[in-house]
Length: 416
Image 1 (tube, helix red, strand yellow):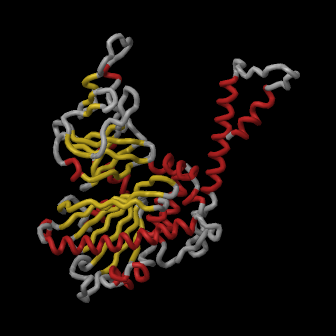
Image 2 (cartoon, rainbow, N blue to C red):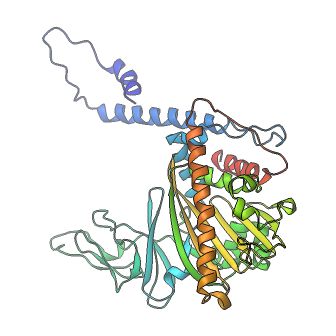
Image 3 (cartoon, one colour):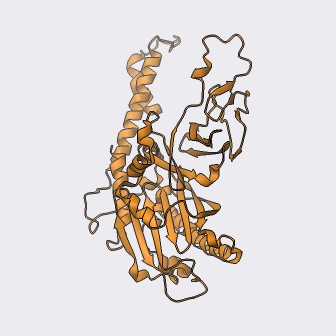
């Protein structure tokens, strides 16, 4: 950035005579600096866009190379993803289990957006930017139940409808309208047990937020398929587990989308409960579904946790729904930086088995084992991506179709 600024400033600065002080307080200095910053930003955007085009979605998978390492390591590429992928469209942020009752709330962060999701006194679902309108302090933390939201900085107080209820020590303030200083709203919707936010369009009409339209925008033609596969609100919520992983968010997604390629090598316990030769992959507009039959042989690892068929649905860009036997778990991959992400697992179970403590504990232990194995894999891949020994790879055409589909969708978003 300094180099860009120097190049812009030189034409405006004359060489001073010996003993003459240089005065940089000329009237158009701010204008020059603004042009410098804009120029630098344009150059950076152009350079980042070139990184996007290092992948060609039109190349058949049999000949295609994978996205380059820069997609997984470059900070400017990460920020482009936030802007073009995560700040647009509907994004899953949580479960309705987190806010079952009026005045329940939870908070979160996606990129630079701090959000607050709650139910007001009437039970209506609402979402806001979690930022006090006074001096930008975060308003709430974590999750729980409150009677109102009181800013921890200066005590400004907000209701669950976002209205400013109390502004402390504002006597003497002029031209202040309390109605102009409520919390800024974010559009929120649900599909099944999942809560979604739309950070792009704060002025969506209520018609656009209706469940049918949200379903169509988020899932496309796959909505009915998922509903008929037992992915709904009838299951009982069990628990949440969170993993912070030292890898780019796409590394975790790629691992999920390799068509079971890594399962026999990295998850031998899981593989023993599946018929890997029955693996199939179906792709929709923004969704890919991998399915596999369960093994008919009973073993210590296979005690009806996986059932007769396992379904693994990936919903672009970062949400996975896994339905197997009596279980459903979801994986939300939250990008934290070019080299770090958080994966949030929520577990659901058929109600008739929720009180079977031994079954629940053993199932969760086996799931935990698989997740920890994946953490090792993903962190190892990230280290390899940062090595000078690797630049691009290839796809296994018969199994990594969903991964290729994911990369093509990313390309489409990043070039819009």
